[in-house]
Image: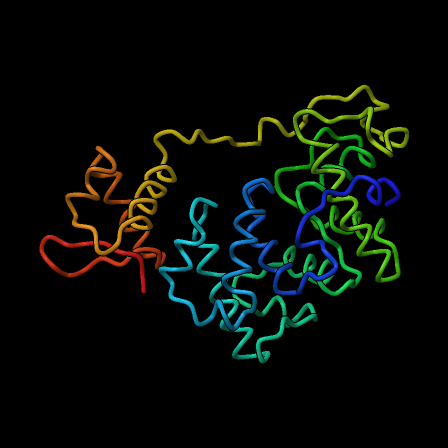
Length: 284
């Protein structure tokens, strides 16, 4: 925490004037998207929709356009659903209890814990990939944590969280920051680590990842994610409905393109008209 006091990045969702809504938006955006891409999007988002009520009243098309290229656009739909639930159930105010947070659309255990810590200064076990990696190395001597989080891992993390609310919230931010900027997955900067002398992994000679064979990596080129991204980019930039032949030009593989279109429609990210030939547009 002393290291964090000196080296913490100046991020807007950590500012003294942050709101619980701003923290929640940041946590949803930061899922699988790096800070450097999230920060400008977050600032623009918060200017446009500074409260849950503002987002709840927005058109879905505007929300998807604002999400732009952050990736995994279903997160944008879930965030708007969450905003509407906050307005309907909590008078537009972010709840602070675990049960009420978990009952909101798209809010899982990690996000609920993060909101409790970073928005309300409450004690919670905030266990993202960065914190998991820090604990795996310093405590367990593993290069990287297992692909899937376990109950034992959560229990271990809980033993390191300070008892009082304020210190626990600070610990959550500090341990996450350490994993994000020093104890990184591929190029850890052990020479800059404030707990290097305590690290079991470093003391053991930095053994290789014992779970490497279980980790799956997927190339981007040619995947359904790439096709979906191209279709969404086309529709975000279009001033109106897009004819089928224009969408067809996005990707040459007809079967893959149609599969991705069907999935986007099923996910509520794209609307397809019943005309022949059909047209496509973002949902209103």
